[in-house]
Length: 420
Image (cartoon, rainbow, N blue to C red; front, side):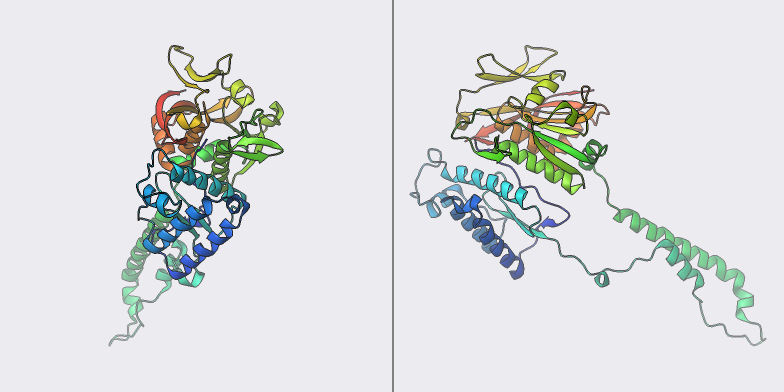
């Protein structure tokens, strides 16, 4: 399986570069690349370092807006003939998918680095995230608070008082005119300062509301991963607590952990085989994966759409409980590289058994799980999902579809939705 994902990042520390890189930033990226490639995730591979070195070099020299063609990489990095068949030999696409996975693993294990390299879906040109420079207090313009501004205007003298020819002090003649004028100015200052401050306040968008409302009850979320009992030799794995987890499930878990960390919520990864009902009754939780996650299969049976598996375990499907003639299925006997489409479920609900906020992110196969994970961790897709769901107070369940090419999942598309 060759699922891909965008890399998560700590938005409090890193920001994607949207300006031409200066020499210092380019130096930081080159140093980080060498550290990255010395890690066992990349060091033991023959293909990944060459791919990553080439695309980073191109981005630094020509800018990240430049496009690199698959054939160019095949010829210059992997030594293919200039006229080789890219459809018959997907070495570039397969390597790009592996690079995305390894980057996700590395940054999940090293969340506080100052530089991150990511290879976005649909492109071979990398993007860079660098630590935001912290402005010194002296460099920031001072904005007086409304109370200080008011006092400054009200207490400042308008002019040095000079007696007139009759000996009458100006303050005695103009006191009634100055006070209203000063109050008017002070009021305007307060209004302007307040207006600026109000516009500078961080706003909570629909994506933030979604995550904050889900995790707020306890500030700690359980992320429940399926453990694989039978592991095909060709399946890329992530070893967790002496058991094997599909790399696609680990990628989704990493992206979710990042969403919670960005909003100052804690998260804890647990295996479905190691968690019990008492654990699930203690915190909000996320269920990742379907067929190999016993808790997904148990707790999703009351939802409008549910996962089912044939008795011979060859077929998996999502069925509409209201109308069982409507379903979305997949033949597990087909090699993953030949799968053309996969389906998944995204559900947000309060589970009646645990009485806890529950989020289900699962596909019939790994590509469906990846697409569902992308839908809830990418602001564009999550906002579209919430708009379709209409922000229901109770919950929602969506069936998503993803087109798969060479084992890589495409963008998630909503094909069915129920709200309550």
